[in-house]
Amino acid sequence: MIAGMIRLLTGVQARWVGAAPVPGPRIYFANHLSNLDLPTLWAAMPPEVRRRVQPVAARDYWTLTPLHRFLAERVFHAELIERKAVTRENNPLRQMEAIIDRGNALIIFPEGRRGTSDDGELLPFKPGMWHLARNRPGLELVPTWLDNLNRILPRGEWLPVPLLASVTFGAPLRLQEGEAKEAFLERCSAALAALADEDPQP
Amino acid sequence: MSDALRWFAIGTFGLLAVATVAGIVGFALARSDKARAVAADANSRIRAWWWLAGCMIGAAWLGRPALVPLFALASFMALREFISLHRTRRGDHRALFLAFFVVLPLQYVFVALPWYGMFAVFVPVYAFLLLTARAAVAGDTTRFLERTAKVQFGLLICVYALSHVPAILLLPGDERANVALLCWFLAVVQLSDVFQWVWGKALGRAKLAPTVSPNKTWGGLIGGLATATAVGAALWWMTPFSPGRAAAFAAGCCFMGVLGGLVMSAIKRDAGAKDWGTSLGGHGGVLDRVDGLAFAAPVFFHVARWVLGQGL
Image (cartoon, rainbow over all chains, first blue to last red):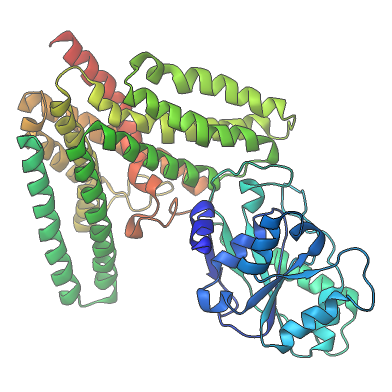
């Protein structure tokens, strides 16, 4: 029901251009421009996929209020991770690997925070996804482009404008044999940015 | 329900039933892939027509309390499609919020009250000046004129012009008669679109404006306008006009409707899209369906207001 409400608010259209909407262990990595990104991406997935996907979210933000905590834990089934004081005990990588090992999919925002660019330019990716891909060989990484959400609710605004959003799922990437960290992150970033130029029709 | 409206409802649903049967038979008889595609497109449009006609006639039966919100909703969806297709910037955010959640509802409140003076000037005077100022206060000057022009154009077409359809209820005369007149207006403008499509498929040769609207042909245009005008005249009993005058009004409405289709098509192509949206099956988006209405309604409203007000 919450998914239905989000779809109504954002009029979101899901377009699976390169990946099939099937449940299973994979990583959806998306651009991050708005607080609505995660709810919209989650709502755009078909229910059988949505039930087997866990977003990775910042603990400091999603435990701000009881409402945040409720949404993160009960609605999105988010895996909350530390952004700051990371130690050996709370290393987010271990949490993410455990989800993959359970056969579930992850949603990550590899930029690590919301961008503010009007043209949707991507910030440099954090290296977490490279470590994950190396520790779990053969893992599929699906580039996921969120369009128009920065216009519906940009960073720093709290009143949404009811425009139509779209989510484009591109062809999955895999870590190649011996691929270096920078080259891999660069390749992922380019694949995600390329989705922005797909047919602009919502 | 007035007699005129009852006959109109019977006629509309009867016509749709015939079209539905014809569509099913046409699809079954189609030999080539091309013919099947035309039939499938027609059938998806007919399905959407059942919904549109059902909502419209239901609202007409309930009168102003239902008609005004129905068109407010159409405005909302049309404006949403219009703004979604055009790149605005962060500096436009607050102005857009006001456009959707303040200007649009207020414009329809002025129709519902009814407050004619405010209805007529609210968008071109107050919304125009204040929203533009709001975007300027936000401080981003990049492509400022282009951005504000997009927001203002969207408001003028999707909200201001379209709100003249329910404003037909405010014309001089009995409101129940005006409900019938509003239905007559919608039927004529929409049928002109349908007949243009049908005639265009039947004898489409010479393209009318190939760069703007590749499916429009001269054959379709002339056939469609003539047929819709004839229908408008035949339905004169729904209007306060004589058959001859009803024909003249119908021709004018259809002509404006064609212009509306062309202008909105040009904007759409410029933005790189074929349809405004996907919410109405074969029709595309809401804006694809109401573009002709938005152009025809203000002209029809003001000419009819003058004619009826003068007691001509």
